[in-house]
Length: 334
Ligand code: NAI
Ligand code: MG
Image (cartoon, rainbow, N blue to C red):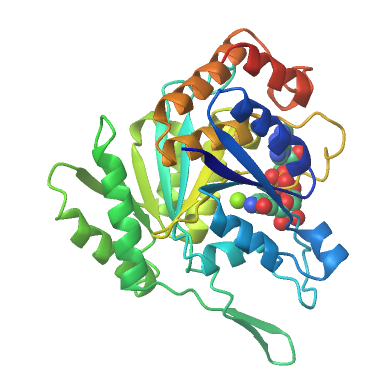
């Protein structure tokens, strides 16, 4: 059976790291067909749509999508909405999986193997915002529903079942945000009762931020709401080498799923050929795992590890290798 993978490079370094990941996928000897689609700020400037219908169709037709990054303006632009948010909402990709695993890189934490399961459709990213008092007061509503919490909790516990430590930490701020986080906590603990084989504990988000720096090896699976998960996962990435090496998956109940490095378009280094492709390549490994090619996924992860073990480093890791050189090094070790 041929695997169809839709590639969306997007903006900035997305145009550099997605072709690298595609080279790695091609080298595996699997029957893969690539399709190509557009999204992002450049796409918006060109055609007035940051996520054209043709892109949505290509994502639907594919077995999975590998996505680079898009650039979003810091202030409101009429007609522009972040394609990432639109995709998550439209395809109901409610689970954002962000694994953090130690890599053989000096000066980074060793012994870390954690998975942040981030709710991906609501919280403060619901888009329910307004200005009042002549623009001098901004209100952003943080939506937490039992339904969305229940399914993200179930995802977290199911993932924990497949991991050696089988532990879930529910991260919230229920001591202060009594309604929203109170509900989140309550539902997670209710779902926990369905998984007696999994150990559950809970932690306030600020303490979690501290413990991640102090002793990240204590965490297995973390389940949390949207914004907390966004922030904690960037923090976790920083422990093992930074945004350049962090992969993620966006999955839901339907067939559409997309995989992307955690980083953004990195305008400060875009176009120079120096972006670290590892985040995108490890995202491709998550994609392979998702479509049932677990063995190929392991090969990719192993090749990344070997290249790093042999001292190949892009600039963000303190070396001088270009995107292409890092990719070549990984390809040679597949
Ligand atoms: P960023 O992730 O693009 O960059 C943060 C820092 O990490 C920069 O110093 C950058 O050079 C570095 N970095 C990122 N990726 C790297 C790589 N592959 N190799 C080496 N270094 C890397 O985040 P920033 O600067 O906050 O946002 C830039 C743009 O990206 C914004 O427009 C933002 O909206 C967008 N963004 C998009 C995301 C997405 O498409 N899912 C996620 C995060 C940000
Ligand atoms: Mg982020």
